[in-house]
Image (cartoon, one colour):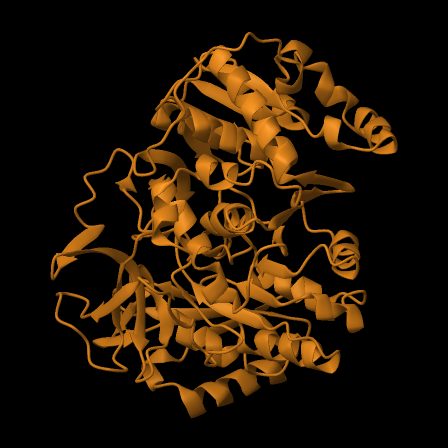
Length: 532
């Protein structure tokens, strides 16, 4: 795709398909063409402008992956507002904190969840309007919706439903600036502390501009899953905008539903999956995820702190069994760089790596305490220069986030890794997770990767206890096998693959490791529960 596309706003990138009757969105049993989608966006933009939304106003969006959420995103982008996207299951306290931090003037919230936040919202100086999926449901589904959410709907002012807003059209200048701030999304931060990341349209659209390189084929006309929440950089940039900017479809899903996924695969309405390891494992274990119709899948991309090699091996073996070219391909990115900068492909991949950098992405590995470059294969800090790197953190001086090398701006990711002789990147964990024991750098991710290779281990998490007199590592292992023999096998495996300082002092077997909203292991919850 031509680089000029990155100079366009998100709205104008899809508006070019105004006359196209190609499907842009799948939702439940509905199909929305580009022609219809842009018509919906234009009407909603007129409504929102009439309601007082202006360029650079901050509008908080708290809604799942439904059609009206999508039209809201592009309508707000057309006006030039800044969209603060929160997880649709955020806590009331998280919402209140974010509204204050971002100085939001408006809140667009899904009707079915409003009652949960009403008490908090009533205390805030914010104008509230409602998003709903009701107009995109079948008659039977509408009846079910009314029955299931009758209590929730009691609190909703129906005149404030966006679909019910009466308005007078007011002429306004369509936003044409792709470089100004346009999105606020939440991140764990490169230092491990929660922060609000500022992105512009160029950041969001860069991964989509490389879709053909990533997929290894023409993307036009195919369908990618839109399951990850839009507040996740991977979710909005790849699950939503990447297909739409390429005249392809996003197959929207409110939550993981294996029946819906397999049905869409069979109908050839789903060709590319974007998942986290937790969802990939659920798919693999589903009995319905099988058969020759898996040939309709071209690729499955997974991004997270780590992906178990066993999962990749088992997933790809299943695809080979049914003759599908689909493979589970690991990539790397972070919210501060809009999700995707490195990726394995069906053509170029290497086991254990997160792939090579996309075109126009530069990477440097430096020592932990300087900008001196590491040698090939040497672990250090990962620095990225890319059109997708963020504008910075909100309400932060950002001095530690960026650095300049040879006149290029680099993002200091906070992640550790190394490059091999072929240019593949291998992740070794986060800088904040590096453990110093007897002067030796210990990487939790390395411990976990070794443990996960032991038969009977489903997943694992290494936690460091910072006892100055006697620092030690505790490994939590998710397993169905609670026998002492499993612990003995893990220790035996460690002695073969790890240095003495990296071997955990304790191994605790658990039924299930707690997960965050994004499906990552919740280390903070483990620390709280076990007083570490």
